[in-house]
Amino acid sequence: HNPPLEQANTEGRIIMYALLKRAFLFISILTLLLSGQALAERLITPEDQLEITVWSDRDMSRTVTVSADGKVVMPLIGSIRVAGVNEDEAAGCIAKALAQYIIDPKISVSIVRARPDRVFVLGRVRNPGVYDIRRNSTVLEGISQAGGLLDKADLDRGTLIRAGNKYEPVNLRALLADGRMKENIHINDGDVIIVPERPDNSVYVLGRVNNPGLYQLEDSVTVMGAIARSGGSADRANLKRVIIIRGNLARPERLEINVQDIIQRGDKNKDITLKAGDTVYVP
Image (tube, rainbow, N blue to C red):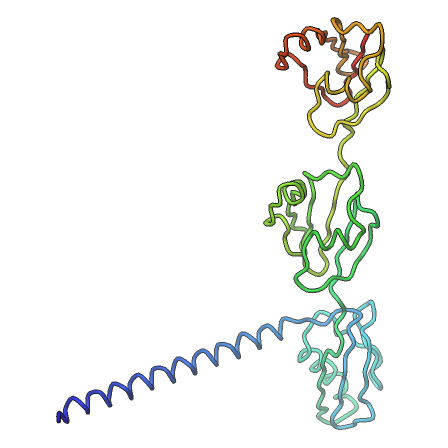
């Protein structure tokens, strides 16, 4: 039997309980403050549906939809702007206007149906336009809403424009081809997704090939690759002196390549990589 030891244990438990109670109280207060801040940050926007209650005269209470210019219409005061403020601030604005007609009006405003978030999807998508999105949607979901990508979409130069004209690059090639999910960033209300058109990377393949014409360069393509895309060389083709014409018409650059030698020796390092606008001529 050791009374001092038991007393010390009891005091320790009391102190521990007090500390835990204080920590719980602190967390509860912090949670309430953060939740209150989150609610206050929800601002009224056009097309929101509001329930406006006038407690001193319930006949004036009504459910209204915020107009495109951010206003609602109330008895006595007519139209009043409420967009861009939270519920409490809107109630204060209405109460101040009604104070000219009602003594100490008590007003409450609540959003009963918020306008869905919207995103603009423009450029090389199937159906460019404005789309409703759920909260925490991503770039891919926005593009999917617009029907997906079209051909000639430049996957390397996607752009997301945020509020305040803040530009964020979106590498759709890394996302779609490599599965790099960090490129699938979240989109917010009012964001604009732009998928530009890929620059014209076409080349002409002419002369003794099976299907002469204009061909689009998807990636880096060599002379041999371009000839293959045009159906291969036709009879009497002179593959020893294939000509590449590069540059503008005023000052063209003329290159010559022995494709037959490359085929026979297997030395693909001598095959020339084409540029947009090149003309390949097989004599």
